[in-house]
Image (cartoon, rainbow, N blue to C red; front, side, top):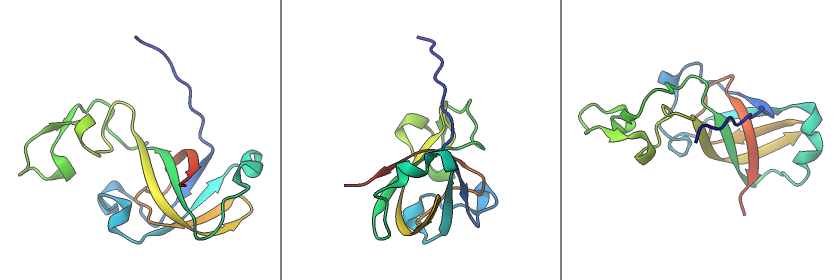
Length: 131
C-alpha cells in the first residue's frame, strides 16, 4: 500500500509563535492573530474569502516527529499513552493540521486571521471556507 503523494504548499503562516513550546494545544484556546501568505499564483483562488468568515487552514506541521505512533495526550505525561490517530498531536506519520480560524482581513494574497496555533514558517497546504 506504499503510494507517494506529492503535496505542494500554497503559502506559509506568519505567526508570533517561534517554537512548538510557545504554541497553544489548540488554536481555539488562544486568540493568536497571524497571517497566511498565499503564493501569488493562487490569488484567484481567494475570491470569496472575506472578513468575518471562518476558514479551515490545512497545514504541514514541519516540526513534527513523523516516527511517533503513541503519545501522551496534550503532552501530559500523567495521562496514559494513546495512539496518535486517537489524539490531535502534531507528531504523527503525516503531520497535517486543520485549524479553524476567523478571517480578520484580506489584502491581496495576505489573509489576517485569529485563532492560530501554528508556528511561524508553517507551510499551508490548503484553505477551505467553512459553511
